[in-house]
Length: 176
Image (cartoon, rainbow, N blue to C red; front, side, top):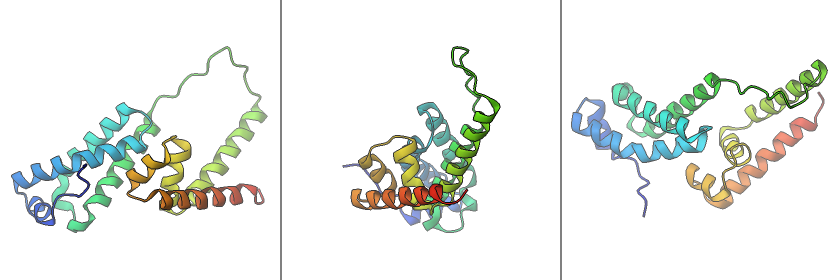
């Protein structure tokens, strides 16, 4: 059976106070969860490993800044998410192959407008629905993998995915 609980609050509290053994235990205990979450969000396995490593370094350096011991999981996942997003933003653009015909300026403008509308519709979703939609539809993870990564039952994941898809569809079918 896989360990799913975060380290005990006593370990987190001692780590916040600077106890080296507790900090080591905290980093070791958080590593599998942080790594699994990074793999669910990042574009490539290499980026996921780098994002997880960066998150653990931040945990090690800044554990004293954590306000509440119960906020560790959300703090770590926010760090991983931000790190994955940073890596996507700074990734070099893939050059277009010359064999593909070039789009007209009008086609490119329409494509950008459509992409912006889809991105805005996804961004407007509640966070829980947005995470499920991104992992399932954009990153291509299976339903069971998404449910496990987010700590949901398969039925709850399917329900959130359905609501997210319906909301995005409604937003895109609305007036431009």
